[in-house]
Image (cartoon, rainbow, N blue to C red; front, top):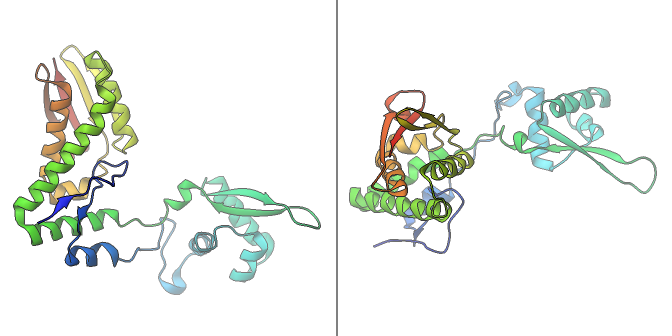
Length: 251
């Protein structure tokens, strides 16, 4: 048997943990190596672009100076500085000066949040592996239990914020704010028929494609949050090939 851990939960309502994690799941969760490449190019040996090599070095070392970078890449300090300043202009790197005992402070470049995001993230692939492992070990019933628990945790999380809202509009505005924070690119519109909740991105798209009950679960969460006096209908669906998810909400 397995249970859902109560003591650990991330800001993402999809993040929860099986306890104790079976050996088969452990092997998937803890021995999947990250891919270290970014959108600027690739890491295929000698074909790696200079900018990619710079980002790899900054990621590895935390911060670099133009002199350190020029030494490692075999280029002039001026050339290294130009590359660093270009990445700074793009918002990929930030600068800070470090005081030294003698002379002027030394300028260092380090990755910004945008810079860290250039590196590949395999959480989507890992989630798929996790879903498949749960289904393989515990069967469809086990996967349904996990989905159901995720739905319950999501509902609890949202209710903490929406319970203090008095009107449907304020509830939806709060829901949009929460979904926006979770990466759904959410927005709210209103017409003569009611409200329209639009989500232009689905951060769990890979998982939902593999496990459609996640989408059904989200629709159920919205309906539960807004109450029996409100109807929630999904009119567009990313998983169905449309460019966004749209929910028509009527009171």
